[in-house]
Amino acid sequence: MIADDPGEPEGDPASLEGDHDPPRSLAVLAEGDGWIVVAKPPGLLVHRGPLSRDAPAALQVLRDQLGQLVYPLHRLDRQASGCLAFALSAEEAGRWQTGFADAEKLYLALVRGYFRWDGVVDVTNPMKDDQGILKDARSEVWCLGRGHSPRSSLLAVRPHTGRFHQVRRHVRDLGHPILGDHNHGDTRVNRAWREERGLQRMALHCLSMRLRRDDGHELAADLPLV
Image 1 (tube, one colour):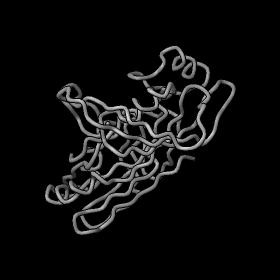
Image 2 (tube, helix red, strand yellow):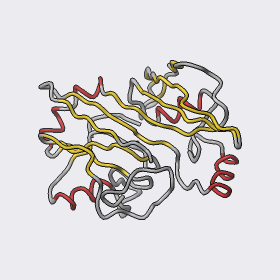
Image 3 (tube, one colour):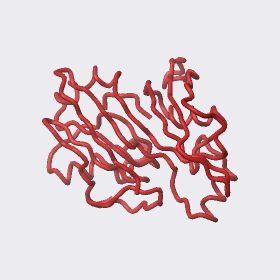
């Protein structure tokens, strides 16, 4: 993995409904010379860790699907869905490293409350990295729609840096935590949405991504919600 980014059966569209059955394959959104982008469903790890050695993970699913080793290029939170990019060799993964500083990614987030701003909000709250060092962080946030019963808003978020849980923490800092976010969200509101509206996942989705390799080759993919 080369970036510090915020981390269904083939043909299934993305949705905000929670289906956490481990998939046997992942829908391919785009592929090119040495890379592939797939649709990650909610509930699936990008890769296993020390505390999740037996959990299903996108890396293993795609490796078995393609019959070869794959290398994740970024993180995508377990309970989030959306575009997930892999390199098909370790050498290829290294070629994308410099380009990730200028990666363009767009997220959709369904959040608590009525978003009170019009236009684009520039959020620049710094964040600590894994070593506790404070780092610059920047996200652009704007509202796509508002609901009144219960009060909620659909936000678009474009992160310009790749800090851990950046999208989730920046919208929380605005007073609008993502629905279903157990780490940074509102426990009472999450329970109400789960019990009354069947929201079984975190309402965060990576809608699109654009990335340029060291030779100028571009990786691009989109995964609209339906």
